[in-house]
Length: 488
Figure 1 (cartoon, one colour):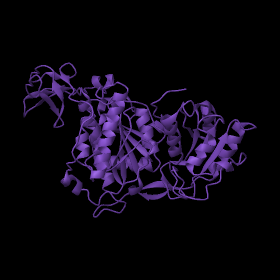
Figure 2 (cartoon, one colour):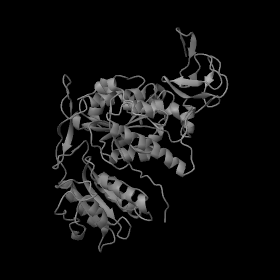
Figure 3 (cartoon, rainbow, N blue to C red):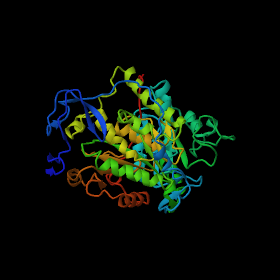
């Protein structure tokens, strides 16, 4: 607790808000220079400002005008390209270069079940080789959009460059059949060789609806559990082949080829003051060197979306941003839910009052760079610089969509703490000293004590070059897939 000499008011270190002046009933409450809601009664100078006396200003679907911040966009002109920016060094990391040109920061074996029925088989196979099983409960008893979402997300993950080899495991009777999934990846579904666990690629590329633009295809094998024989023993044999075909050595790769996901979870009142701004400065640092970052969690943009819209590089990107925001609000409305009931009990206990309060802190992870693209759920990163991506606030689902988009690692800011890790390295950045001291086995970086972006960038390059994140050391790695429909 300290005294601010300018205002002669007490400043507390609990992450909560206290009024710097009297606030009238109905008056907007300002934080980060923006309204975070309005006072539901008169608030006296020095009084605690929180859920008991503040209410959100948010409504439903809105209309927006494209009013770009030309100065901010001009400041990054030419920086978000794969070419080396003038007068800026482009550091390198040590990554794995695949034959098709993709670059990974890990060389894992991933075992991908097409249906939840073979999750345990996938886990046993992954354990046998030190790999990772991407278990999930779906792949059957789904219809329409949910079925497509599951199949597409798994296909995108099979493409991830952090996987040196992928074993796709099918049961044999699920909706997400091995043959249809292979066709989605660009293989000829009529050419499955049981013993080799492989399909032949289609003779013509690109394949409609396939993520693969052209051969050669990645290091993938396929296993159908209902085929005759011991499925576990056959899986072990296929894993040996995958291991033999993995890239052998790390090579120097410019950070312009690095793709980083931006995420927060278990936020507190310090998240928007320490951890999120540090991640935002790194996002700008990487964009200025030709790299890519991706910001998701659309519900945690509500109330701060106009700040992002002003940074959309073109009218077309702005239009996609508007659709992303309003489509997610309509999703809430279709389930008879309001769009502003977002802060969790933990968020509120940590000092976050309204969704605007949370969002204005959350979007700081995107720094100040122009928005170069807006991606749908399940799309892959296409542009260098900052992209926005459709996804919920849920930690597991949002992190998975970042991984499926091609992010090599995720920067996950937190004020309350979480052990969660996605299938890619998930660095936890603490917003406060107390969390970093209490949970050193979870936290990779303390933003309150270590706000220097150059040192932070060095840490990220070290992780990209092989240093394990805390979630990897704990073996906490997994995925979660969005679901919106019925289960049969």
